[in-house]
View 1 (cartoon, one colour):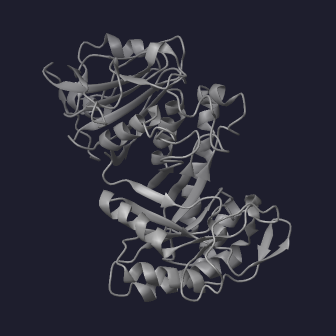
View 2 (view 1 turned 180 degrees about the horizontal axis):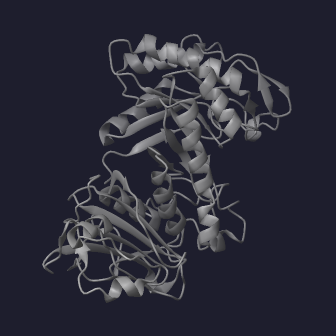
Amino acid sequence: AFSPLRIRVGGSLQDQVVYETPNLGSPCRPFTKASSGLFGFSKGCITMERWDAMNDLFLNTGAVITFGLNALRGRKQIRKGVWGGAWNSSNAQEFMEYTVSMNYPIDSWEFGNELSGSGIGASVGAEQYGKDLVELQKIVDQLYENSSKPLVLAPGGFYDKQWFAKLLDVSGPNVVRGMTHHIYNLGAGNDPHVANRILDPQHLSRVSDTFRDLQLTVQRHGPWSAPWVGEAGGAYNSGSRTVSNTFLDSFWYLDQLGQSAKYDTKVYCRQTLIGGNYGLLDTDTYVPNPDYYSALLWHRLMGNGVLSIDFGGTSYLRAYAHCGKQKGGIALLLINLSQNMGSMVTVRNDLNVGLAQGQGITRDSSFVHGLKRTVSWVGSKASDGLEKREEYHLTAQDGNRFARTMLLNGVPLELTEDGDIPPMYPVQVSASSPIYVAPLSIAFVVFPDFEADAC
């Protein structure tokens, strides 16, 4: 349905995975529980038979693959949680050589998982990490000399300003092409306050500081790179059993997609496609959870161009605008966090209204001023009332914010009898009328005739 969907293969045990290559030097055994190991597990080995099967799936589905390499190989723990010494690249290089020999298309090789800053379970200093990335880039250059080269990504961890800056300084130009960071801004999955945080506009907005800081760090220390969200699941430790697979979860998710795009994030990887409470698919039935459909609408409607909008109104109404993806024009995302107040929204292109009227617009913060206008302006000319916009309103089944089923324009989003994704039809509305966003609802609105210079 997403075509193409990026799959990131990696995670907590990534830095304990070895690969079944000719010179591995030990039997290829799976993970076992081990109290002395990182996260309570031993090292584990991936067989090439398993890697072949995974790539068969990737090739058949057209998935775009980011693969996370073991960045602790060869290092020693020098004190609790801190690892030192140079990376031993030999096992990873042989694994990459096999991957190239089989013509498996890897979009990007990511180096390590959550080893940045103070780390999660283990950490590595930024200077050593940067030197090891230079070595990884040399391996990529050597193996892919006559073909398109996968990108090198790092560090796949939580943002730490000084650590990230030093990593870019040490690794130097054109090594790290994507700065991957992880976000779990709702707290632990078993925290009883997860649902409240999702509906708190101030809490949701705090993550903008991270996006803004990372964008500046990349601009100052590594303009050849770009911010990526390598992993985000809302609540960590597999998400919330009562929230992450429900309608309510889409509010933080879509809001974070909107915020991240404003600060030049190029890729956003959701934790997870399947697995834990925060999977887009139910772990037992494989039936899509509400967030699957939210992701699909974002994927289909919101283009790459991000537009600046001037928005007046309650902080509980969140608004994001992009160039339209399929039909041109623009696409709006409106998220109403209020549980009891609906919002009326008018859309104008202030730049063009000013030009058309020969004067600027008197701005104020109330919606009333906009609603009283007899003409809504769309694009560079006054609407003649014939243009239409498309609206996709998402609400909870039976008004229950913890419902497992989401409604699109009042119709339940459920798989068809054949197991296919249901059609996701918009309602057509006159482009010049105000948009009504019901309490605790989400609306995607596409204006195909809206003329935005940036699009």
